[in-house]
Image 1 (tube, rainbow, N blue to C red):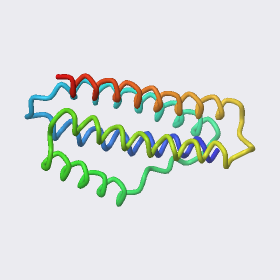
Image 2: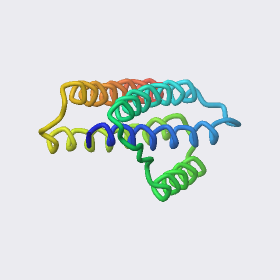
Image 3: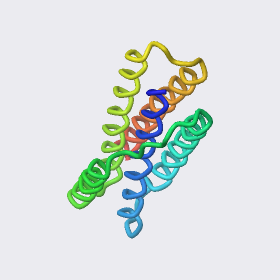
Image 4: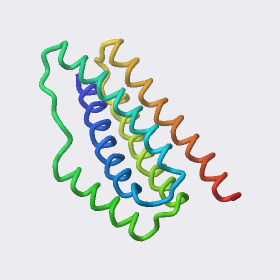
Length: 146
């Protein structure tokens, strides 16, 4: 059950952060908007999958911390004000997703008594994040090449 909560909370925090990033990019010319929207859609899918499994099992949904969301919002705002280039945005996304990969990988190793359905979702979620990093790295290279 712990892994589902982790996926739900990580997705919730990611959606919140990506929403904030989209707000910050709204008035800016940025080719990163479509990438951010795509990432947000993916995290929303995983959030819903974890939410449904938790509800099926009668578990209470635990949102990510308000403080964490506020700090994330403030961090996004500061980074965008400092550097709103597509390359900087992509780099920020890579760093955030990399932290998520480390977290879910740790959670997978820690919780040995998971149901097969939970393991499958966690592995899919981990691969989703790794695929996003790979896509973002390619985008970053394309942006550098100009």
